[in-house]
Length: 360
Image (tube, rainbow, N blue to C red; front, side, top):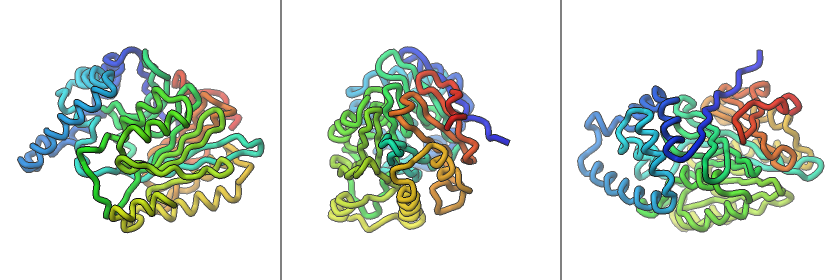
């Protein structure tokens, strides 16, 4: 029996309407997320000193984010109105307040490699609790239509694809021992929202890496065959060579990024994240399929039986595959439990299922 496609929430219109629609459609899930992620703001477990710090941090982020992305403010307000929550809580969700002083979350794996004609296939996983997340297809009045997977109640984007044929893969950059300036960080999820809504090429993605200070590994592929792979670490980034159109990243820095971060206290991959193991699995699969990557092969790889330590594991919420040069508007998505037959093709312009999925 084929697993069902992921439900897609389609949001259309100006910023406030996008928020109102999400808040109304996902009201119960948003309330659950507020309770699970922001419960410390209600139950008295947050020390007064921490509350004071978070209030100042929230004020700084409000000023920074609404200055750079002013359209986020009415959208966040719309979510609050649609879901029936306080606007301050809506802000705290989108600013990732439950991870105050923490710069990463989840795991995730990403890769890119060419097919027999040199066209780039890209794919990977979002590894985090499935119940927190939703799949949204957004049709804004400004910028590009896109499909991504925010935590319900946020204005985020992460792994996904837009109508320009730009596909993004992200993996949290987890760096034990690294010291960082909390007051310089920008929520990575909002940077990715900017990328998916306003970038069409990997060059424009790299521009965001220069402009914003965030922690993340990312791989971007555009419809022109461009591949950009980078580790971003709060004000600096290392671009990794995409030799012959190949790239792979999990949750630790590699190459020059590892060297640069070692100078800031990095002690090696986080134990228990299986980041090195997953990267080795991706590298082995890519060697076998170098120059002959296909969507069916990627489905089989990403849909292999879930186990801890594997690319597909019990924490994998979604897996995605895209080939922007051949199918610039198609994103193959499988939701948990990810299986080869569970991938369905969606049109990133509309959020609708496409028959092309049977071809892949």
